[in-house]
Length: 162
Image 1 (tube, rainbow, N blue to C red):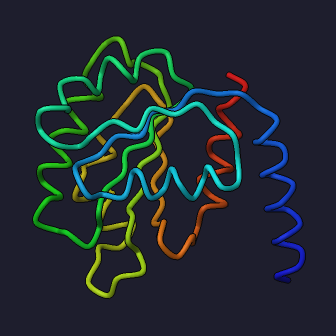
Image 2 (image 1 turned 180 degrees about the vertical axis):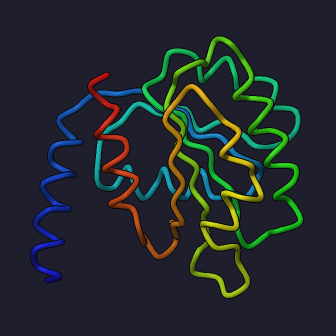
């Protein structure tokens, strides 16, 4: 079974590599944005804005999210104390009319750590069901362990041609 998965994954990466798209990675500081970008950049070619997560940079998020194929919001699911802040920032970002309709991929990073939220818990904690008017997907990943990146690539491939 692993051989079939590897062949499908390799095909997705080749397909994705041939596409051109713009993606913005946003999230609070230390969520794993740059780590994910490094991992993806080892497999695919993409134009990506990796915007800092410190408070002074958050006012710029909307500007860099305009007109992209997809917005990727990364959350450290092992740092549960920051989840309410991530929720506030995400909902604030999604409220901009200039970003209406842009697909949103929420990634719970650091799924390799023992004390973490599950994907279902993350969906509830971030109130993702309240975000309307766009495709919203949520996955747990580990940029460090490179787990579940196939789901990330599949989501991006789906929206690359739109």
